[in-house]
Image 1 (cartoon, chains in turn green, cyan, blue, orange):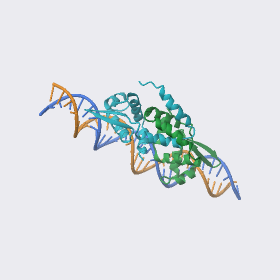
Image 2: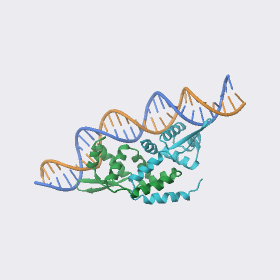
Image 3: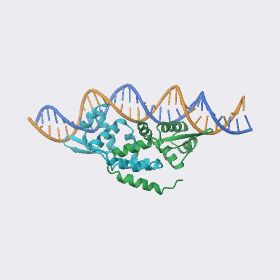
Image 4: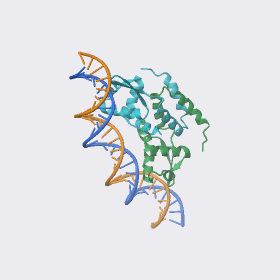
Length: 109
Length: 109
DNA sequence: TCCAAGTGTCAGCGGTTGCTGACATGAGCG
DNA sequence: CGCTCATGTCAGCAACCGCTGACACTTGGA
């Protein structure tokens, strides 16, 4: 039941902001993320990244003094999505159809 | 920005339990739900249902002294799913395909 | 009209969480 | 080596959250 932590991690607006940045940037160092997050300091960003990593939503790559974080699409996000689909199945047929199609013409920056 | 409340509502395990019950029962009174939730009392269940309702995840129908709650698939759950799909797009192609198919052979208890 | 059932609301408390500043760690560089 | 940079970790505090018991409200029925 790893999705417990994932749901918890997703509940924080700052953490969702971080995920948004990573979704757009592909890979980002802690400092680069902290520069964009103006609501809290670097320490808080570091802690948030740990929560996201433990929850299995992002992955970490170390390179020298830097640590690069990126979205982990094969992590617990799958469980979250699956669970939500099971609960809200009816009426979500359109989302399940529309979203993957919208992904097609998305520009990978 | 209604999905903020939805993410927050989904973060609580008891609330996810309630959603699971409603997903299986189609429609349920507060007392019936509280009977199945053994971890907390009726008061807490009532409060949780309010959170879920304000967040746009469940809908309420009043009938006499009873209040029947049910999943609201057209509520903010769509926004949550859409947002998650946008963030975790890559590698979720399989989920977007597999889940709706898996729903087919789900036994309507 | 009175009472019981179903539910919402509130005060109060205990536990949790998130933020910050200070310190620790570890890698590059002179 | 010694210094600096990038980052993690910790203590402490303030804010928030969830649970419960008591009470209020509404509805249905005798």
